[in-house]
Each structure stands twice: as C-alpha cells, then as structure tokens.
Length: 385
Image: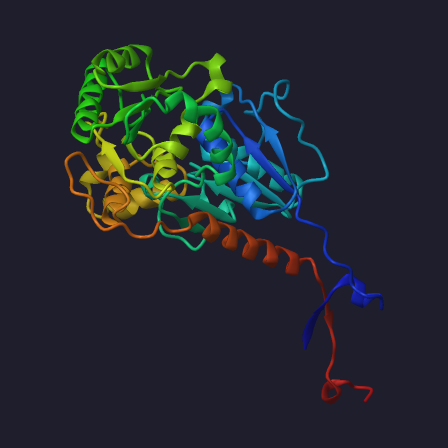
C-alpha cells in the first residue's frame, strides 16, 4: 500500500509546521481590478507581495500567441520578478495571464495560478478562474462563478473616512442619495446627453424624497459628460469631481459609509458591488449599451457550443453582458431599476468567503503533493517474510 509521509517523519524527526504560503499579487493599471486583488490577498491571511506591473505595446498581441511569457512586461517600470518563486500567483484580466503562466513555468509548475474576471487564454492553464456573470465564461470545474466582484470596501476603511466627511455633509437634507458615476467602457458610452438624463433623474429622486445628492464621478467619466451632469443638477448636492491630483480628497468611501441610498450607473460592476455590499437600497441608472457587431459564427447550427469553446481556448474575447449581472442582482432584490418598487432583499452571498475557501482547498492540495510517497509491502506479499 502507498502511504504519504512528510519529510520530518521520513527522517525520524517530528514534522515541522509547513511555512506560510508565499503569494504574489500582480497589480496592473485598473483601480477596480487592483482593489479586488488586494482584498482577496488580505482575506487569505497569508503574507503577500504586491508586484506592480507595467505593460508594453506587445500586450495587444493575442494571449494564445504569447503563451507563457513576459514579453509584454515593461521591465524598466515594473517591480522585479525573481526567485524564490511564489506558491500562489493572483492576477486579473487579459494582460496578466501570460505573465502568470510564465511565473508558473519558472517555478517548474509549482506555483498555483488564481485569475480574476477572465483570462482570454486557455482556461485549463489556470488552477482557478474567479468570474462574474457579465464575462460569460463556461461552466468548468476550475471556474468559480460569483455574483459580484470582490472589492467591497472593508468596514474599518469606511469608518475612517466618516469623521473626515460627515461635517462637510451635515448641512444637506436627508436622505443622502449617493450618485456613483462611471463612464466610457467597451460596453457603454456616457455622452453629454445621457449625463444630462442622469442629472435630471437624480434631481427628481431628491425632490420626491426631500433629500440631497452626493455625486461622485470617476476616472472613466468624460469631462464633457461630467459638465453636462452637473449643469443639470438643480437640487441640494455635494459634488466630488474626480481628478488625478485629488486622491487624498476622494469622497467616494465616505459616500459608501454615509449615504442612505444609492444610484449607480450601469457600466460599473465594481461600484455596484460596493454599493450593494452596504445593505442599503441601490437603484440602477441604465441606458442603451454600445452596439456590438454580431459574430458570423452565430448563424451556424451549434454556434453556441462553438462560441463557448472559442472563449474557453481564448481565441475570442467574451462580450461582456452587463444585463446578465443586472438581472441576477434584481432577481435577488439587491438592485432596482428606475421607478421599480423595492423587492424583498435576499442576503448578499459572501463571494469573498466562498473564494477564500476554494483557494485554501487548492493550496491544501498543493501542500499534499509536496509530501514524499513511500511504498510499504504488506507481510503477506513480502518475499522474505
């Protein structure tokens, strides 16, 4: 029979506790992605190194061609990547996928890869892919489908911003309605006309409730859309207009902590996740998404299975389906559309705890693989017995 014995046991000495898992977190340019990565790394409770990575123009090449490589990394502007190689690599989205695979190759396959959102690379190269409805990844044993992104702000972080901002807002009538404004993306375009509609809608809500608006734009909000939004606001309001130079004065976290309810633009899953995590009412401001060209393959029989296979192999990028995310949130009562009566709210699933459990199980398997196998012959088969 085969029995796995630890190194300590094999040498006749008491086995020592295994060293903590070494974790690398690959941070890119996206603030929302980075927030998810760091939140997950902190929740795991293992020591981790945040590796800030900058990419060169080669990152536009298909991941299927890049394979396991760091050709896309701007080594002059990125943190160094050198041994000892990590036990666990946590990355997110398309750009980090080739680099994560390269790190695993350097570790001779020992590093486990956990990837958030999507990889646009063959999914079997990753030990776990953590995704949400809008990315439309197929059901696979190494794909974890969560409801929302993992970047809900921690209570202690929110609490620290309350004292700084409460006095600035206390002159405004309640309820305080936080208006969280995204902007342009591959799925949506926030033009001045849409921004004006948002301004009028939020003002109407403030008038009907007797409250005031706490408005926050974001890095993706076009300047002309922000101008149009603010010009349409004719109700009591506090406005935080995002600027690269005003990060220390960012009111966003204070809004999450203090607002009585939220209106969130449909283009941002991260802002929806953070608003829904507060447990307070969240209303969606939606508009017509950008027109996406129809793929020719959908005209053929069995095209859905073919498209799923092409997404799995990273040959095509899945079109983000924000409506799928919105429908699921509304079904659970976590989100309402304009004019909708609030439905019975279900408890928000603890996607972070679910993800941590999966990763801990994954790393437990990795630890067991490091044990040394010994084969003992039973007395009945021992030729010398």
